[in-house]
Length: 466
Image (cartoon, rainbow, N blue to C red; front, side, top):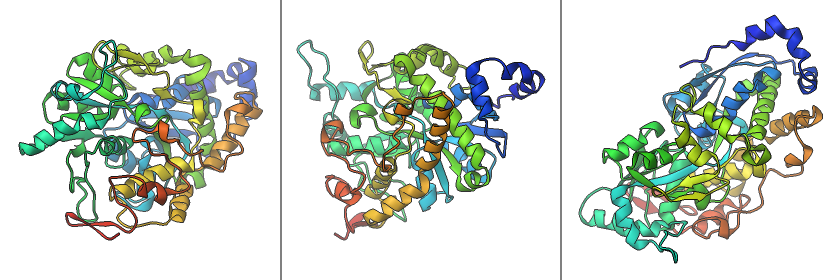
């Protein structure tokens, strides 16, 4: 479904009135970039973390930058990426792994870059009611009899072992082979001693030596697929975990905030050709997206209910507002009736959420190497160089400085002096108790119990090398 571009004609007809509307708008327009391309089409998948695009459109931030944008939902992540590569879309809401994978040639090959990280956190892992009942005896409870969170995958391991002993596959869904969801699900499973399987250059199923069999399921179809019994659990973004709760068909057992506190999620992706051909347009759209992210988080999430109402429309996420609000407004419901405060479940601007950190890119690359999507050893310098070829904080900071100069953002909200790497994530903030330092990717890989290390490769069904 395509949005009609109505506002451009309004701007032309009433330009003089709009220019004089407010002091801030006048300031923004006085600094308007001379964009090389003003009509743009952006793609997205129907998930709540596409919110910066919806808000930039609805609040007129794109227009403030002289951009006339059409937003168009896409059928799946592959179609979305392919259409950005062919130029049918100028840019898109993307899985953070997509620009990296495309650039290194895993799957569809193309040089995709990102000047803007769209959010932190926002995903969960849900299991069917049947599996939940089998897990519960293995989960500690507090003095009031309530399940203690976070829940380790060790509680699921006896269930998976039982299925294996009975010769039954334990099937789980994730949204795409290079999705955060795939890596988060694998991370959680491995932290509990459940092997999620390897990829190889000849077998891209990701199920080599697997205890749990992971396969792709489009996000909106996950609840129905779970209800049908085709999968026993899944990892997905909202609102599709909360949808399982409302339908009474499943229980979210853990959020990605509990797997890795304030982990990076989606990015806004563009081809390198686009940013080279249209540098001012790239800056302008980055400015608009930063403003949208600020609006989403400002005043302690005061605007979130308005955002929920916008996202619930059929042209955006198209889920019930009540379902979206269940996670978007600072809470998360696990077992039906067990709603808990998770104020940072969705973060769009706090914690420098929108800055495209190299260390975030390196983490995705380590997970690709860990599970065999990168089949051979790479030295630490390769991870750094690859991250810097895809993530573009230089563009981001240039856009941020313009907003600060225009009085539309606060200087203190941006990490001006960073070298592009976050401080190492402490062990206490990650589910398996293993710290992460993006500057030392191979040492990090060596510290993980399950996964490829050093010179190891997957040949056939075996791990070879040391």
